[in-house]
Image (cartoon, rainbow, N blue to C red):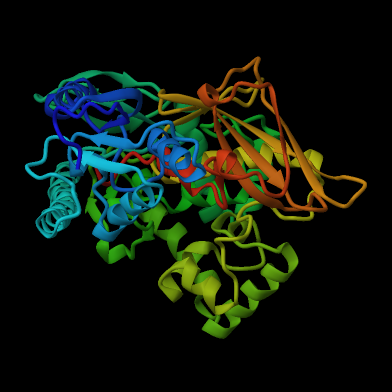
Length: 514
């Protein structure tokens, strides 16, 4: 316990966090309260770690907090106390033991955490520990209850025909309307509504895009042309997707199976409750408003396309489907919905979801774990051809989480939600004369992206080993040389999958809460 009036200087770090613009929890207000607490106890604040606009539900995305923990665990912290405004600023973890564990890591390094606005001293007493546990549970419960309320509100808006996040898609555009239903203008990629009373609807896009959507359905339904051949024809005609990319079987399949093209407003196809687990929901759990938008294709044509997709697998047993999936895994070395959808000789990924409940369960039945594997790009592609495919992987993942992405055609620089930019590079795996593995990551200082996504290739350069997400503000050199083990200073930027990057752009079936 730090006693007021102590003559011994006590060096401290302040940690502040807010996830919204609520004045009560602004970082300035938090820091002012922390400074008053420190002044009353003769504590010197030597550094401040700040996470602005960051959710407290998980560690991911809280770069300052991760740096704080890294400094503590490495033994490089030049302070013996951490000052936080209250327990909720430390985190709103859904498992209260998570926050307790993080505080224990500090305690193990002889660093004390003080919650300046709480009505108890964090002195290890029974009363303090009981109150702290209750506060942690209350902090997590607040997020859970708010998530339920937000979801209910979103469902009501969907049923009224208003769009809830996500890109418009090819052939459609987002239009902002006011509380009286009067159009205010079209939202460009990356733009969001700024007034709480405004709403977003979908409208038909440029005539040439609308005609292309109808052409896709006509070729598929009336002429029996498969998705891959449709993609070839569109690419041959110089037509590109809404992301400026060539068409693939998967992107054609997405157009043929998304209900928004028949005018339906569909929500909760994928949920990400409290940022804990991404779930692809069965159709009976979708929230739908039929005929909410102007349809690009007639309902009968859309349903016929769905029947054709379903018919392709109707005669296949579960064992047949799993045999096909197992063969694909052996041929490609990795599985994903896009990999499955690129094959003409097997059913689409949606068939596997419907038959087995989810793709993950189908993967499990054939002995595949997607957590450790590269889910989009086949491992036998030549390294020099990987870069555009990696960008596609990142873009598809960000889109899947509701992010709005634009890609600079000349540089490949990604603009995410109009909030930050990202550049994708591939780090070749080399070998020293002694047999040790090395990677050299050269940062693109000319583009100056906010985040560099470095794909570190495994030995042999045929598959990714892991990923480094490198914030520009933390990088002081133009290049990094990595070994197999790089210590805690760089491990904070290392991830086994790209899910953390995708979570940065998750736009919310569920609101990020403090």
